[in-house]
Image 1: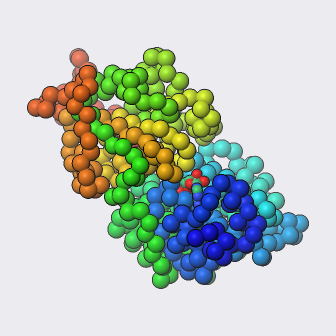
Image 2: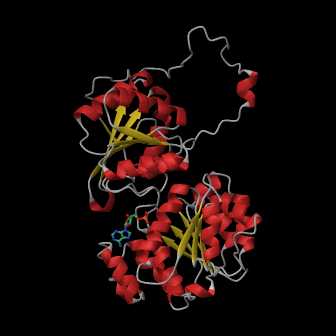
Image 3: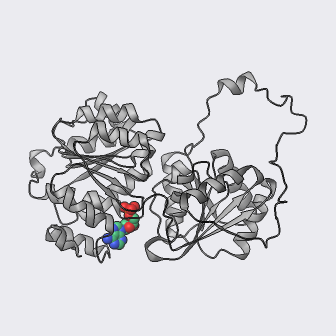
Length: 411
Ligand code: AMP
């Protein structure tokens, strides 16, 4: 199948071919015709499958013929809501590339940066808006954005959106758009709560399922290292020195863990940067750019900050901490071995994480290859380590009032 067989016009096909895409991916082949038929569609596909173009291309095609002249004042006709700033930026970049040979304009709004340039852009007029939920609602409160002409509403990464507590925001945004509109929902996983959301938002949706979460990318070699928790840093250095060649993303569960590992690796002479939810948008973008350019070869990230980020040619992923949600493992290792390239995923498992391995193996329906020969093996009988600072004034099982009160964001 070719792009031109999907009902896309020449300027769009030309822009796509210029990206080096030879043929549509599976999710594009299945989704594009449905969107062009004006159907509501619910798509289960991970990032890396080409899902952004699966909604961007038919949206552009639909808008192509009814472009407003720039001087007449453009109105937002397609709205894409996505949970993180990085994803929003990536989606906008894609729209811009694919609409290169048109007058269609794409804009973006996300939090953590000043309002004025975004208001300015909205005043000038755009056809397509990519937004994170909070900032979009803030702008609406300030009468800076009108969604009354939206014809297509895309909910991207719906599962992550729900995990991040955006359910009320999504509902508000949906109600700000006209009742009659086409709605598309994309989600990497399809837990019951996403299915429930789809029922309330979409009308008789057609389902497209491309890569179920349990199918780990075939080109990724998966390796498992059992290691005592305090030895993980040494094991990481060992693997970086002896095994990995090229770029690597290291995943940690917490922001604190990311910062700590970044310091250790930098002290050992590695060029490294990191992204997590406490960093400003500019710092996150800078880190991402440095990694993409090859200025640093190691990027350390929490899951939420890294979710869906499209970074090509990652040679390896290290799961420094194993994720407690099995689907997250599949997302993480999906960062490597993209587009037919080979990649390796290294997972470090300490005594307290053994249950996670079982759950992951059940999900991916295969056993991960265990690397026995390494300098920091875990005693098979080892019990989970409990870390408490010497002289800690808090007794086991008792939390300080301060720590009880403090609500921690962990991503
Ligand atoms: P996505 O799943 O949308 O994050 O896309 C993952 C990567 O695949 C991005 O770098 C896209 O530029 C790329 N891509 C999208 N469609 C195609 C295609 N048909 N052929 C080759 N690469 C593609």
